Image 1 (tube, rainbow, N blue to C red):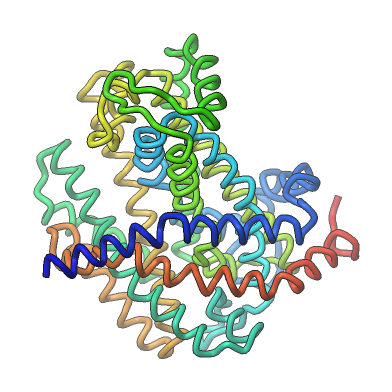
Image 2 (image 1 turned 90 degrees about the vertical axis):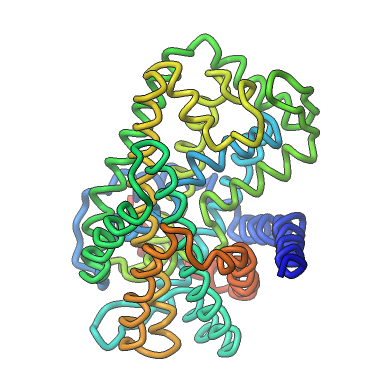
Length: 451
């Protein structure tokens, strides 16, 4: 069993090294060029159609509002990757890794936009009259690759089970450390909360995340801003470190072991890709339910997602960790606690630990809610609505199992399953890029564009 586990671990590390970075970044660069660098040239218009219309109502075809779809998609990306993943990237790649996270975000905007556009273009109504879509639909309908579509759906359906257990275990362990609450109790409470939301359907999920995600983001950003104000004098040097060591090695200092340029690039790209989920194929599943009359208009919300997730929230985390000195105070084995350590310089150890635990709890709950929605839609695509309802129950029970540390042998397949989801999605985006370009041209050069 140990040799099998080691094989899976080595295979996962290889896949998520250079091959996955080349695939995701290469695909993103291709789409960026194919779309004429629109995420830069049309950025003011994109922001006006997203941030400027957060509260706008419409009667376009769809099940949830554009912002509800976006907040639900953000619920999946916001979480441990922002608070834990960024410090890990800095611990292993140095401050220069932050620069490469920004590069990933700028390129990933085109990828996320493309996914959402295709999600709406090929969406359809299910038996309950709700709009459904995602990679499994645009792979089957747009390319005619039925077997690939079924493979994607099956892999993601299984991946959600593993991911749900890992998420539940991470927050249960965190709560136990901060408040002394047993994992079984916290897992049971989380399972009940999530169950109440997901059994209400996509409209309930959209309604909850629409309120929860903005609140969580604002709270986290305000707390981070307080820490940055406290360490304001260190901000210029932090920015120098980020840009300087993106292309030059950085030597060891304090608990930091030092890092070369290759490490900065690898960890910056990897954490950036994992954070905003551009190319993973998950976002278009929820965006396909949005009330919108043009795929490009909903695609702009995909650009908005990446911007908020990586360029805003992840950047705030990075600056908090660097300006506070937390990145040099501890070694890479304790990188996950860097934000709590940084917050403790202002709020004290006990308060900082409680703050991070509560924020992570809310982030993880919202993440699990949307993950289960993703999983049940794969089950619906494969076997129909009745089976998707069954999988909804399975995923809910998986929360409790994961919280107490059960079925850990499944967890080791998480990243490998995720890779099996990403590969067909990126290939499909490249093959369907002509259609993505046609939708984009129709919006900007047709009658759909709004001032």
